[in-house]
View (cartoon, rainbow, N blue to C red):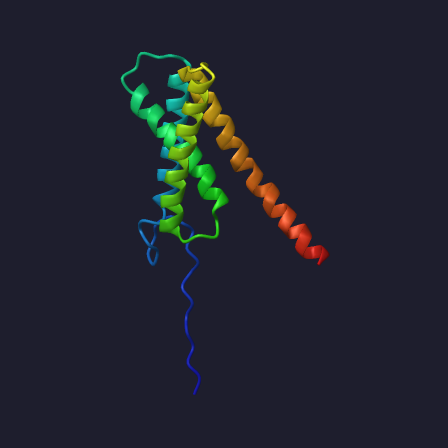
Length: 140
């Protein structure tokens, strides 16, 4: 005698039955974090007098380099990767501040731009490095 099993329908990410209810919330939280970081950078660069300028800018200064370092450390487990990426973000922020102070060019706008450029370069170099690994494996 043969037993037939009915496969559950594939989940579409809508939080329907048979799906983890928190799974559909993660992309929303990521979107909110990106929006808050972007607003923080804009408020800092525009020299706004908003009371949200300080916390949102601090969030940007932690989130941007942390995301870049976390993307570069793709092979680690989630918790160690989060810990190392936050530590890397703090190190990048401190090195930018110390470098700007050493050359007597400290400014809030310059610091935000420097952290943005460094984070963008690290984030953009990750796919380049992966592409080089793929081509090296194909040649071997």
